Image (cartoon, rainbow, N blue to C red):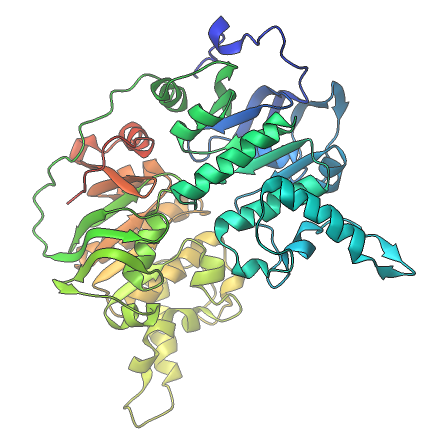
Length: 523
């Protein structure tokens, strides 16, 4: 296990450093047999931007949830202003002056800015009726402090992502928060929007507010954060207080040792299959920048990178769920520009989305319904016949479910009653009815156990063996090492390198995921 860097440069605070606002001492948290946090200790100073960094699953978000009262620690002590506290729930955190802005924005769609800023607070009343005047007056003061130029009556649905973040920060200030934690605030922002948010964060810190800043962008962490804590596998591997630290030092702490970043753009191995998908210099309006990659028939190409790298956005562009502003996408040599995902399905492209429960499955319907949904037309005897042959659909769903080892009584079982691994197998099985030309998999084994993961991988390999080109997006580098023939790595919307053969290792993938220096396309 890596040791904490306790050199004077890394840990000695300046003599005039303020007493910590928040202290965490020996906090541990496990989920089942998995250790998410192991003896974590850190201090957050008032008026300081404190960076939390680490690879996916390193423990950053778990610590944030513990501080927010969403999860309870197994052991350890949390102190606020030197006094030991118990953060039983989010209300207790708010009462302590702690505010948390998570990656999943907690805005209420359809509500205006003012109502979202007041969410969670008891508005003043007059004669039993909400008195909006003092609330609006206070909200205007907070909005002016943040430089919010849009009306408080604006529907939040009409705001950009950057402006929605401002609304969430404003909500925290409406509660007089002394500490605001932000989890990946710039992941979906443009460079100009990120710069604007950085300015606001600096102003918050200058006014005495403590800011916890969680980000995968090491350059912005180095520039913005005065204190930095690095996590690896639930353990703190490096702390810096009021000192500058290089990107190379941070990467070494994240990985656990010094690494030599591999040469970029390795030659692809000999591939016998024809090119099925070609992405050439593709960009979108927000994140994706000049991305190129090729997937061949029978090949499993991995797409690696950290949260906010742009991997899912590339898949959405291919699938017709995202709009590109530049570049070309070809399917079997022909340019494509699908208006909606249904067009992609008709062209022979399948998608298993990251959020399978909300985007990839009908949880209240049966296994056979979910498996047959993409190919219902094949169950009609003719175009003139409006009825479907349900018995045939049930038979083929039973056969496919058995082939991918879905554990259920029969194909009439409700998908929502299945385990996560079996739900994922149903989502993939949908594309076994008619073998697709191209299958896009976003986090193919997220939330499934080890045994189910092995079965999911077997199904993916069998599809590739039948000639399907597979593009697998995964935040689990070990999964990419085990599954893929080649891996293209992205960081901040750009391709940073391509790995093949024995060069596909978890360490190499992680190094390239934090690299911004090389923007060469992967062919």
